[in-house]
Image 1 (cartoon, helix red, strand yellow):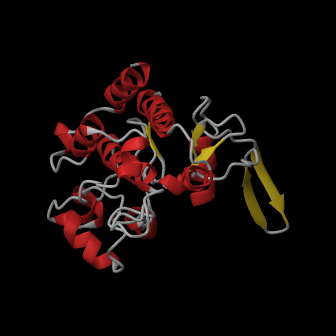
Image 2 (spheres, rainbow, N blue to C red):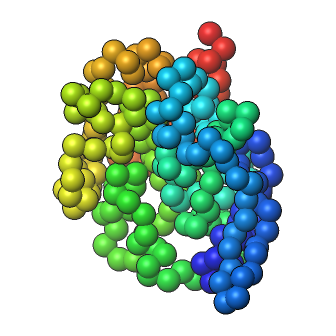
Length: 241
């Protein structure tokens, strides 16, 4: 059922910054979702292997893809945005992938989801309202939770290449904390990752404006977070300077 749901969502989408869906392949009793092979791997591997990667451009492209999802009819919530779910094409462009936790927000249909699907995800990228939900019925991935996750993506992709001597290893948000439960507590109480300090990050495009965008994405009030379309505009304007 989860595979069918992912295929249904992914198969509707066509955009330069969405990984193309080629179809389902059945091999014996197992089914596979098929997409083009992305030789550059995911965004984190690409940034690590390419010191001259234009990180702000990649982030702007992710925002383009996210804005497309959020303005699609019916609206699509990705639900699992993180650096490892963003792949880089042969031409060096970012493509959002992995629609396993995605949802078509169709008001004409009553959604039915399993408990494992509802609680899936990782606290390093999840918004506090997801972790603070008291019942599974209160767990709802939204465009605002996607935007929160996008702020985390900005942090991890910009910081991935920092030196190992700095707390910011760039692997994941709160990468200096091993226990996921400790990360969840920080997110639940509105605590934020520390601001990056490494000079290499500044060289990759990190500045006050980028940090302010991240902070806006991480607002504890979902309604105060920017829309994906406004992020798209802000990042595009920054890259045109």
